[in-house]
Length: 199
Length: 150
Image 1 (cartoon, each protein chain N blue to C red):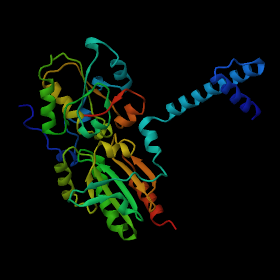
Image 2 (cartoon, rainbow over the protein chains, first blue to last red):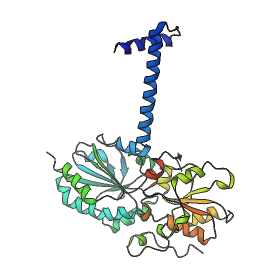
Image 3 (cartoon, rainbow over the protein chains, first blue to last red):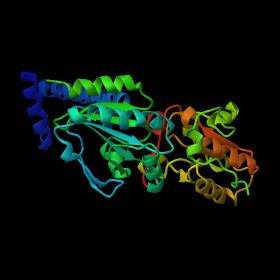
């Protein structure tokens, strides 16, 4: 602590352009440089361990889900904030994503099964062409709202650079889980039930 | 002509045996690993490939390999036409790297048809970037060069 105070004083003197005086100042400067180097190393290690999209996505966990408003495929207003109080499964998908199409019929089933308990699925199509999304929406008889995504929404959610991607948002609007790629649906269901029936 | 009999997009997800233009149809000798491409991006002249993304334009806008161009989704007729038009003026020996990264390699509907098209057009130096999971996990997260925008 004392050393810290001395270091601050030495640094402060240095910043005012005064010459450092005596062995104390030299030791302080060395420690200050060592500390700076350690901080750089730690920062480097953090960057190495925490890559761009992974960290951006991780940083969403246990935080408020980024809010958004979009027109859904039926022309209605889709505002995430209006689902506060419900457990939301936010699913990014596309018609070209085969694993997405394995998941979606199950989401339809969950919406039917858990909807009365306060569960809501929201789909975000990352297709370039809304018409393709509309066709699949009809073919799979989706019973939940779907809106078209874009790069801004993708970035809000940590970068959607591979599908499928699913987030679980709790009744308070906080992100509680993220599932990237092909995921065992039982795992997702277990997590959503834990959120849904939490007391 | 080459595009006349493309498989409809949704037909590819109906199950059954893998189609002749699936990602699995690309010979392993024609696959390029991400670290190899990263090295090649620093090369000069003919050793530097033309990198074409043949998947989702939206995902391309979010992030794409630095210097890459969007060339249309390989799973769609219009996308393959765009790719065909892009490569039409190029010499058949041009070094071209295709990539998609929309979803896991064995599920990608785009890379196989795009690769097959270039092969059918007579291109002899085409590689497909092997992205096991997706562009985010296998390229961006590994610190490789990325650009944004369409």
